Image 1 (tube, rainbow, N blue to C red):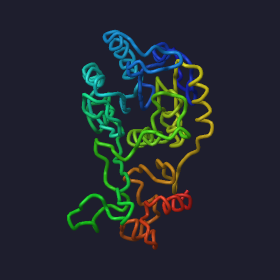
Image 2 (image 1 turned 180 degrees about the horizontal axis):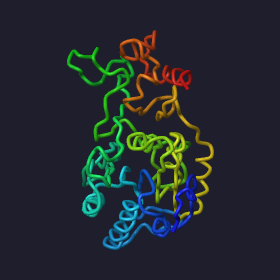
Image 3 (image 1 turned 120 degrees about the vertical axis):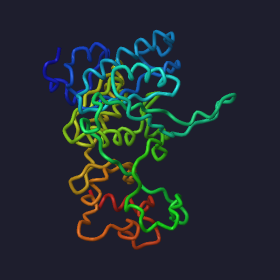
Image 4 (image 1 turned 90 degrees about the vertical axis):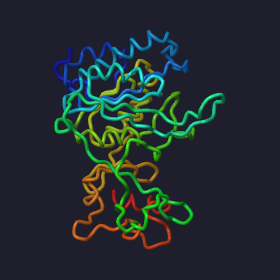
Length: 318
């Protein structure tokens, strides 16, 4: 039993996640996130992704129970998968933790025929504490969606555009602004790699700087990279030695993304996520009334979140 969690902090560990979690003391990490194999016969290097249904669910119940056990009462538990399995996961998690949200990640998909277009994944969000006063949660904002041609809001604000927030709306439980990694040059050799901004959003929403984030199926390191970029500590586990090597390489080159002392999620020059409470500090605009950022920061015909503009803006603010 690891009496001191610091023995594992900021490490990518090769091994069976169940065996390793059973060695971790109760209530020791601030956030747990799992993106397990989907049992869809995907090709992994050292894992057979084709268990019998009940064997798969029994195994999932075991590692979910361990995730809940090692998470602090102030912490958060997240599980990512397809809806088919999340309905089973929820049945088990409802017995040992408190349900908060089913986050629908609209990631885009391709028609398969003879079925509805599979266009979203789910992320179950649970806590160990019942009262909102007893666990960490921060309001999150994401950028206003705008037309690339005319730079106008895609959302109709009903004549109240001037009252819109300077950066973007508060987050709901449907996320359509973060996309899967499609370009091969940005992908690692893994069948189910998640985008770093997805994990950064969860981390900003439920943890503080210096907190510990644990991932029992770390794959090529997405969760660990996101944690490091946001000033958190991480513990990643994977059974595959090759994935562990890739994870370590990715973590080693990751750098913090901080503006005016506040952590943000940024990708390809775009700020993807920020905490609501950090907005004024990030834009260094304490004295003036907050206006739309495209009015305040951009004197050209391009909107502030136009790719040609925000890359420069973001680099200037870092």
